[in-house]
Length: 265
Image 1 (cartoon, rainbow, N blue to C red):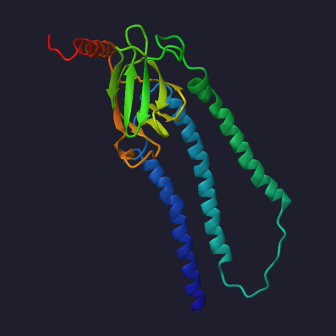
Image 2: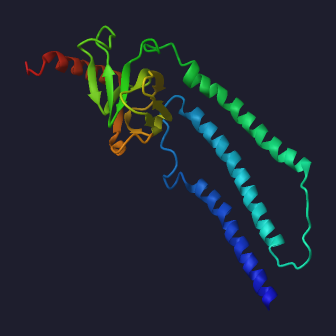
Image 3: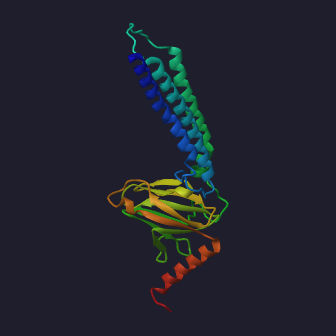
């Protein structure tokens, strides 16, 4: 009777551990339907980032499932009470080499897989548009606890008196490679727009070139993804992607409001 109870208990424990990979895989498959997965990608390089993420997720997922299945097997196979003398083993050098070599090969695969995407985003951005690293559309500043964006004057100068500055809201044209310099006025911040698959730290004392190309009109959340102080939760803004003619009209309206000096004439 006791042996039967022990067997049933071992089966119950093994079943509970088996539920872990089953529920894990199930939630992964259904995550998109439950709207707890990534938001819609609207940037030109977001698809490349998603493919890298999915590749790593599948690699980790397969390893996770195999590890959990092995754990279930060991529970069933070796948890039975056994009064016999223990067997001592010094291990297997071959097995150690195998479980060292496999992760090394996987890491090399990941490293080489991401080189093209890294080059596109960080090293060789597009240079066939109106804006570039040498000619950015704007400057973006992170500070406790807001985002500030500065558009140059008509001469492309960021130091003049006619610079347009906006808090929290960034306006850009659709289907345009937007370049900007990201800076911090105090501590470390992180510029994060999930729909663009864009996340870049703003480091004090540094001007970091950033670019994106939004391919869909809309307003997208801009948040700070780096804990920067007690008001970190307030660093929430919007990136407004407008049709090109609407962007030009908005920019012209901002310049006219600036030149009017507050008058209504």
